Image (cartoon, rainbow, N blue to C red; front, top):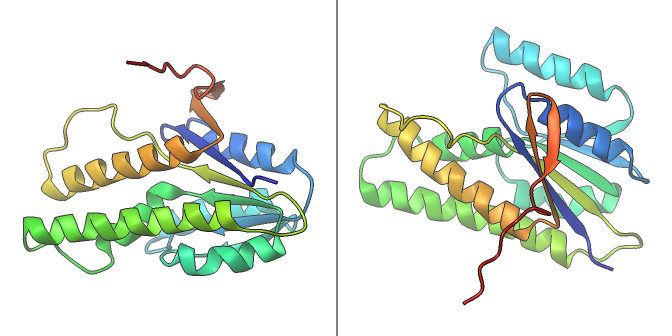
Length: 195
């Protein structure tokens, strides 16, 4: 029995989270919701409140801004369908976790740590063995379609986020992109070059 990984991407306010939640609710078993956002201001508190209202009492809720790899096994023990919303906020938390960058080596070390944490989560999902098949749905933002940011930290984040998204999408069994509320299955449209 192979546990499934699903990747849902799109721009801000595209409808990707709503699509991912509907997809999760269409599957059988206890639902788990990993929320990665942190409420630092009123606007973020409002966003989190709206997400909580949508979830109501159907979900087991987990607030995990950092060490997801340490928690995923326990969550899979308790839930058959897990929604991670979102990879973008989680990556932001990890990028900023240890303060400012002082050198290129510091940037490289932070990126290696983040990518190893992502890989540890993916490996834990694939390796998990339980009574039923597990499905983990990752929501993320597609952030690389605009201009190169003028701000150094924004460029660093964009590059790391792009690599995180590529890593999870490559591992995923299904990949969806939502644009203006319309979702397409982009993994099914993937072009493979051989030779």
